[in-house]
Amino acid sequence: MTQGMATAPTATMFILTDWLTRATQLHASDAHFHTGYPPLFRLNGNITPISNELLTDALLRSEILPILNDSEKQTFLERKDVDFTFEIPGTGRYRGSLFIGQSGINANFRILAPEASTLEALSLPAELARFTQFHHGLLLVTGPAGSGKSTTLAALINLINEQHQGSHILTLEDPIEIIHRHRGCIVNQRQVPLHTESYARAMRAALREDPDVIVVGEMRDAETISLAMTAAETGHLVIATMHTTDAVKSITRIVDSFPPDKQAQIRTMLAESLQAVFSQLLLPTIDGKSRALAYELLFVNAAIANMIKDRKTFQIPQVMQIGRAQGMMTLGLSIADLVRNGRVSREVAKKYVEDAYM
Image (cartoon, rainbow, N blue to C red):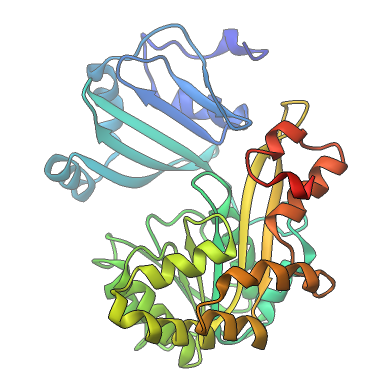
């Protein structure tokens, strides 16, 4: 058990703010509270029990339901799940997800950064700063859940906020995670569904709200994807996240979101609007005390645009390897670098890449 756990609050007297404060102090990424289980924190990528006492449905309901506003409570009662944000003044902000399971009520709280970090502080590649140099087109930040996409996205927004003087940044999020203060830009943040019905509805409205930069928290459906590409084609810079692990899978996911008779048109739109894709994974380090960033970075040039249009995306990784001098990186090469530098074990690496990279 982690040193200092003896001072942790007890499950029998479940006080949500005490447990979330404890999670923040231990630098957990998430705090899990499930009926029939002890409190659990995700530490260095692993879910770890923090007590031997089991939580009950009644305890969780008594502490979690009161922090919801009336709209969130109504959504939870109607749909049996709801996403929301919660703040403990002086301690931190949290993205909550509350849902009903077989045993009772369950909640997950993601610990949010108090403010946007920098690319350097996050150990992100310096080449990623080129995202802020684009003034139109589609930029993708991708990765599985828990890989740090939101943190990377916030760092990019912060950089644009500082560098694009006099621009209007409009973010569409579910929920709003990191609050962006006005620096060189006007920043308006809209939460789905609190401030707008859906991502697609917000995207349609965004085209009439004079934004220079549109940030889409997640491209979930064909309508949102189509509107994002249209915005990118019409002079806006659109930055969006997706739950995909590399550039080729991201392109394939976008195209496959549409019916077959529309896919040729979508490939053409994507070839003309896509500027770059950054994909990231967090892998356990050899010492087990932290996680290392593995990433893939694609900048779309004329050759890659033609591959997208001509259904030859399988050739893209070869171009990326050749383009390493221009800042491109494949996931395989990135993980191989981590192995050579002694950050990640070969056994872990083989779960993600072929032996040819090792």
